Length: 114
Length: 113
Image 1: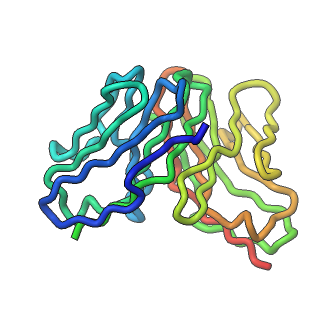
Image 2: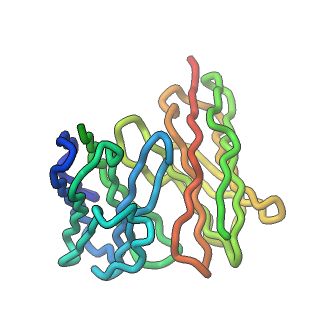
């Protein structure tokens, strides 16, 4: 398996533009997580899907952020409109569903909003 | 409330010496503990986990961790450090009463030649 795949790896955009980050989880994993990592706040869970259904989106900063998982092999995180404070590295991770299972992380998308 | 503490922002160790990266936790219910490593410009990689059984858990790259229930700790150890072990290390905990993985702030490990 290729592991968790994220695209793009780097994104530079201007304030106010829409940004879409993409994730392909590991085949057979039924849990998917979106995280954001910054120097100031460390690693933050944004949203968690189980079997394509959003279970917990309490970490989504505000209405500008939205996430979808239309099928088991694809998820998107959208920011509209983007702001400079959204600049961070965004990680997608997947796992099997039990509390015993570790998460497998993608390489991340480094987002810079100018 | 569940929490994880990594009391050291940075740990410096000479190559060849033993290393310890500390982690303490607080959960209600049985804890399930994880260590991850992050190399520069990379995603987090799973190192090892404690679920049940033997308190000493062995993982990737020669790392091990010891679960201590009375001290609510899960310290990461390696007998002989390598320069290539230099990275950011994260401890995380989950319990059987809460699916969410709670992350520590991370500890930067620097191994000097």
